[in-house]
Length: 364
Image (cartoon, rainbow, N blue to C red; front, side):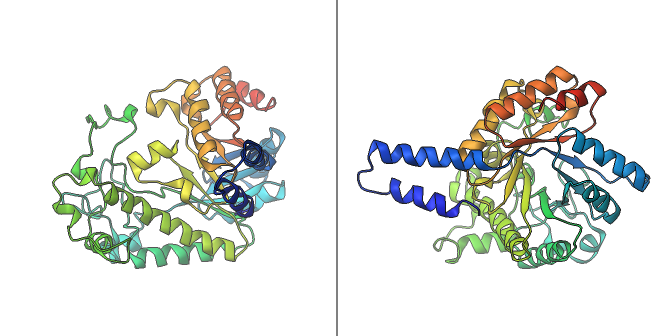
């Protein structure tokens, strides 16, 4: 990553036996400078518009440029959209579902790739929560090879500037609290039907010497598996390994990789086994969707600050905002201000904007 050497320098000073107050201040100032040296950028998540003409696509993307956007994260490999966006100067990254895969080819031919919950149920036969939740197991080598091959093909295309990972996690072992009522749940603990993955590959790798020392107890036989922090961390680590292997593919091709992640390091690790601070990304897009967590707009500031501080200036941080829960222009303005005052390097929007909201963007 861009600031590897700077971070190494800072850690070297901190590691000194008796660093002076002046030396510690130098470390803090250098990290602050690193954080602020990234260029400010604003992004938009964009879904495919199959019906739009080339002229309509160009007009759409020109509007983004006119309102301060630098790049788009486009869902799926739609060359026409990518080239239209590039023609007006936008960065074009492909928005890619990663671990949640209901592809017909995989469903028909690789049922063994799917994650298994603590009850022994596979996402292939019994998807949790909704029918499209078909989670692959990140420990399995064929799954990793499949994903790497996909990324390799995508980064070879000249119209794709970078890879943007989504659903790069385990299934929600606990849903965001605003969704509990929708599914008739009170998830004040980890329920076995939503706790993944307990397949033989995960259990054997966890128990092997290859993962931090041999363990004798099958985690599924533990009295309370969620209380075993080593087992919880193992699941996070398998996702981290997948991301970092995909990052190697991107970086070998000279292209950046990013990810849409859950809103804070604390929440991400707790409810979807995402330890995204450890990922070898070039930028990160935390989905700071306040209403999903029954929070007000001030939470956008505190959540952004937690993530920015955790990254310590290593990569750019772009606060993801969910437009369906920002219904007015003042709400959007407040959310953006709260993100930027927490030292986000910009923001990324998902959803449609009203004419008044487009006007707000002119001030940011």
